Length: 282
Image 1 (cartoon, rainbow, N blue to C red):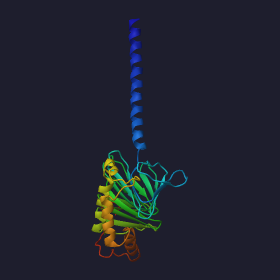
Image 2 (cartoon, rainbow, N blue to C red):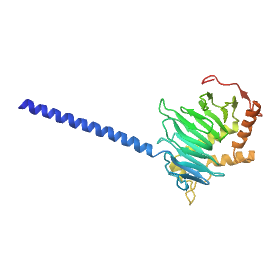
Image 3 (cartoon, rainbow, N blue to C red):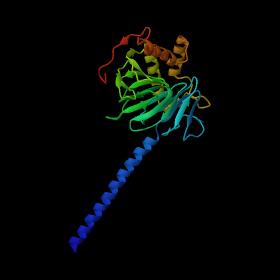
């Protein structure tokens, strides 16, 4: 009888341990899901920014809003929206004026750009992970870097700031973009040669990254009575550079240069042209 009792006790302990293990796994999964459900989160809004969920009416985007898969975000003239995509605040996205994006949150493809001017700063990405952005003419991907994309229905431009970005047309051709350079991909799938990014564009990216990377509590100190962000260091830098250029944004400037490249296959004016890179798909 004593042996049977000991055997029953062992079985009981095994069952209890199994239940506890399952509870632990369930708890970890729930915590992970909770973190994932908190992002991408809106950290700053300037001007008029709206979002649409489940094909319903467009609503105003507010600081603290969490975007969901399938949401569409739209910015208007002189507007911007910053997002954070991880709890450490190292993965950032800036959506600039006159842009429209769709939140995908897939395993690889995270966003679709309908007509957009966006910046990304992606640090601390999990090893082996891939972050891709879909545009009407290309797929752009990184494994941890800073980059910018201009896109519309006819062209995608990829600017690389830190590390390399790769651009892929829908025929599967892939070219890399090393830091300090950009490429364009046209609606016909043609991928341009490498062209050097102007110094001012690099300054714009660094200024935005500093601004978007500010801690949330620091942003709260600089809001007006309506909860809108006052002029940040990035916005002041933007205004100074816009005064110098006399343009609201560098998107048109880059697009005109890209059109010249596409039509004449020649380097941008006053920008040193480089040959194609050999590291990915060239």
